[in-house]
Image 1 (cartoon, rainbow, N blue to C red):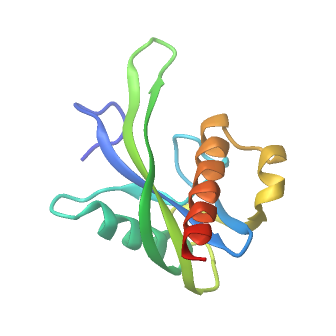
Image 2 (tube, rainbow, N blue to C red; image 1 turned 135 degrees about the vertical axis):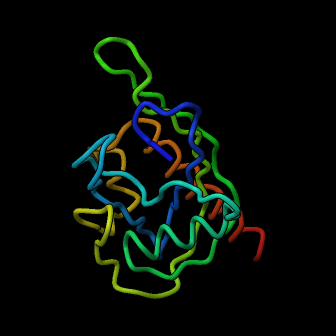
Image 3 (cartoon, rainbow, N blue to C red; image 1 turned 120 degrees about the vertical axis):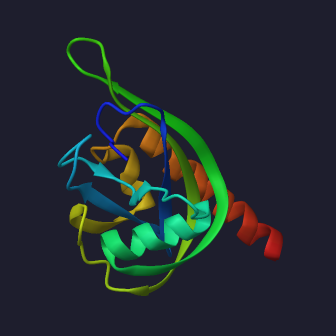
Length: 149
């Protein structure tokens, strides 16, 4: 399936991976957004569930094992080229994920990975929608922990 100038939107997944009070960020190794910080994720393969796609993408991109939780947000990312044509169009389903194991080393589509304290997210170089979805995931996690008490 071609990602650039697609014939239809592409479904992708994102993982907001939380360990303690930190979230894992990955520096993108592919366009769109080459070199920018984001959450790990990627495209869903034909016949693959969304949750299985999250697990696979995180393993391939950042070498971590995770537990996939709730959907945090469904977003659209549409990028136009200078002529106004749709160059990329993604429908993204972002999940709250719990870190299980692994070192968090970049591979395949990530140039670099970093655990970032939630307190630093507002000051980190991230798109506003990414900051918002990370904050929402931490709030969902906190509510879940409060409900367990």
